[in-house]
Each structure stands twice: as C-alpha cells, then as structure tokens.
Length: 609
Image (cartoon, rainbow, N blue to C red; front, side, top):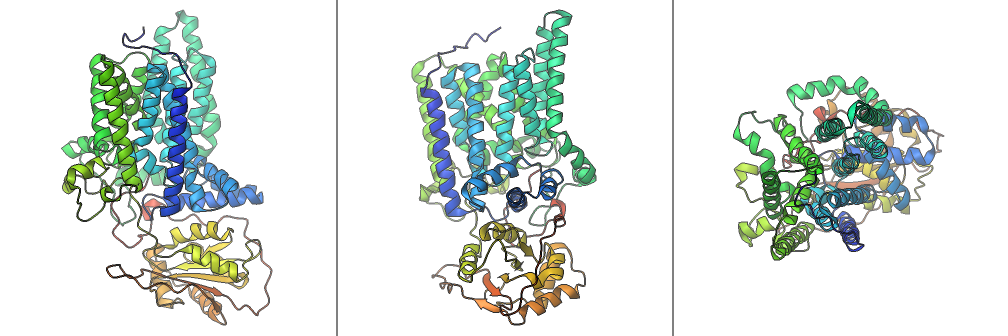
C-alpha cells in the first residue's frame, strides 16, 4: 500500500536537466581542482591504485593479456576502478589527473541512480534534490578527487538499490536480472564491503516479495528471480573472489583480529565496543568530514522525520541501506570516516523525502533553498573559491561558526582531530616530475624504446608514489623503481638510458650507498645486496647530468625545499644492449599492513578496506 504522503508528479525535462547540470559542474570543478592540486600525497591508497591503473592501461595498449589478467584478477583490489581509469587515460592520455578524473563517470552514475530512486519514491523534484544534495557532500565530491574506490562503490550501491526497488521484491524478472548484473559489478568496485551495504536491503526485498506473492507459484517465481540474480552476480565477480581468497584470505583474517598499520606506522583507529566514542563515531563524522555541519544536521532531521511517520514501500529499502550499513560499521572495531560514504545517498534521499512531506509550500521551498545555498557555499569553500573560509591549520579569521559552515570541523580537536574534511587540498609534492618529463624530452627520450631507472630516497615523496606517477608522466611502463623492483635494476641496468633521482637532500645529486641502504630499509628491511649497490656504481660511471631549471629560492616565511630532483643520461656514448620487458609482472608490493611510512606525520587517515 502506498504511503499516504506520496504525491507522484508528472516527469518533465527540467529535473533531469538540473541533475545533469550538477554533474557537469562537478566534473568541471573536479578537473580544475586536480589540475591545480594533483593527487593527495599519501592519504588512503592512491599510490597502489595509480600503479595498478597504469599497468592496466599500458598492458591494454600493448595487448599483453597475461600481464593484464594478473593486474585485473590477482591483485589486492578489484578491477572496476582501474578499468575506468585506464579508459579515461586512453581517451585523454596517460596521467594521474586523467586517471582520477574517471570518477566523474561514476558521479554521473551516482546522480542518475539517486535521481531515479528519488523520483520513484517522491517524484522527480525530490529525486533531483536528493541527487544534488548527494553531490554536495564533501565525502562524495572530495573522494571524487582521489583515485580511490569510494565513489565507484557508492555509485554501484545506489544503482543496485534502484534496480532492487524496481524489481518489486524480485517479482519482476528484468529488474531482478538488472540488480544481479549491477551487484556483480558492484562487488568488483571494492573488496567485500559492497555486500555490507546491499545485504540487508536485498534480504528485505526478498522477504517482501515472498510475503506479497500470490500463492506457491508466485513464491517460486520470486525465488527463481532472486536465484537468477545471484547466479548472474556470481558469474561476474566469482572468478576474482576465488583468486582473492586463494591469495589474501589469511592476511584479511589477520587484519580482522589485529587491525592494520596505516601510512604513519600507527595502528588503525580502534575503539571499544561499549565506549561512547564508538557509538558516536559515524554520527560525529556525518557532521564533520562526511556532510559538513549544515547538510549533516538536515540529514539527521530528515531521518528522524521519516522514521517518525514510518517508512513505507521502497523507503524501507532506503532506510535499511543507510541506517543498516552504518549500524554494521559501528559494530566493526576499525573506524574510518570514508567506510560509510556509500550510505550517504540513502541519507540524501531521506532528507529529500522529509522536505517533500512539509505541508506548507513556502516552508518546503525555504528548506530546499537554504540547503542548496549552504551546500554550494561549503563546496565552493572546500574547492578554494572562498579563500578566507577554507578550513586550514592556524588562525581562522572567520571564527569557528563560519569555519564550520565552510566545511571545517564544528567539534573540539580532542573529539575529532583526525576527522579532517576529505575534500581538503593535499600538501604539494616536494618534487615536480613534470620537470623531469620535460628534461627527458629535451634529451631525446623515446618512450617506445628507452627505459628509465628511478630512485627516491626522499621520505616526503616515497618511491611508491613517485614510480607510478613517473610511468604516466613519461608515457611508458618501462620505469624500474630501484626499491620496488630491485631485481630489474640489478639485472637490466645496462639497458637503461636515463636515471631519475628524487633525493631527500636537495643538494645531493647522486645517491650514496648509505642513502640506498636507508631507503630500502624503510621500504621492506635491508638485506645485504652488493649487486644493487654495484649497479648504482656502474650507472654512475660516465653518467651525464641532464639540465633542469634552477629551483627558485624560498620566499621569506616559506619552508625550504624538501627534496631534490635530478636526471642523468647513463653513459650516452656506449652501445645499447637490446632488451625486452619481462612478461611476468613485478613482485606485489607489501600489503597495507606492511606499508612504508612517507616520513611525515600525516593526519591519521588509515588505508581503505
């Protein structure tokens, strides 16, 4: 039976056009933000995803199917994010900006799904409002600026719930099959967590379908549709998870018991089950890093209003999706604000539903206008348009209230000191690989023929960040990181033409033995490797420096350079030995539980699950 307050309205072109315009504007600001700021410097796991996306892109371009299979189905993360990034790089050229901009595609899927589900619940106007609110949440547009699976996962969860609602409790076969296909793809967006968001809504839809079916034949039809959806989902994601269980099951089991180690070398946030901070964690993050103060308060009020009147029909699926998944993550001892990003579209839908229930048109219009204005203001502040109000360290001339309305934390630091807004700008990288790219071009670098050896002993710009960026900047996957792939440097250094060095000391242009040893020890523990040190000695014989622009001296008050960038041509007068890249992929980097520290005390934002 329909909810008594439901007032379906005829669809028109205006509301889909509003949603499409919002997606385009977000795409433009995301691209401009990436061009100005680049990728974040080590928060979460961008370096892994960038490395995998680069491998997928280059192997797709070269037709290397065995290597492609490895990086799609035998790596730590599912392939959907990396395939999307590779597709964008195929269209726009290789680069970390193009890879991260692939999230704009998933923002479009997310907005369309939220609009479709909201239009089904309360009409096109409410659907458009829910989609716009969802795009204005800092966790959504902020994570769209990262090469992380959060936005992909959120989009696939929203699309799957939309198809689940359209199946009418698995009574409609086509919608049930669409749900199965979207669920299978969603399981390839991020590891396992997709099931935590869809499990309860799917079970509720199946229960409603069985309860509303006409007799035994109807119940059999519902079960058959649900079974076909499950089989289709398994057909799409089963092969990856078989490999995942074979390779990583023991490691994941250990993390459940002991937790992980984040990029600063500390343990992940673990709070006692019965401690008040455990139960308040995601409520605090809603008002802080996930939605911001104004939109977060509106979401909590919207949830309260819908629950007070009682959700009906498909709204029950949305409540199970949003509140059920937050409750599940509250019971998990690891607490990270971006774990529950895929629950935010459900809260946007409930906020729009509560506003739609307001009986006085003027109150409804005023509420919508206030939320949109405050959301746009917050988005502009976090994007850098309102410079005085951008949340940042140090004195804030606007005061705590204005800072909170601009996306800053409204809570004392001892409550949420690690809950920095997920849309905040990254710290600039201490070395610009674009300068190395231009220097290589001036020296006659041929991406189709020449190979590069890379070493970074800078603690502020570790090789795990520098190597994938170099592969995309230089236009070739033949970049061997000395720390990540020492076997290649030992065995094939004589085939390399260039050496790129990111030095922890801006004045030291060639690595010393102790620098290599210290960097390797930070990465995975030094083992006596005379052959690796011998390779650097041999490369240094006759190496010719490639000129780079002189760095400008720091202005008064600015910190001095944290790293130096140097490019060398290796014995340019010697004959080249022919070489071929190895067909087998390089050894997998240490998993997140053994990840190296970038060396500075980053805000404690642990790795993605």
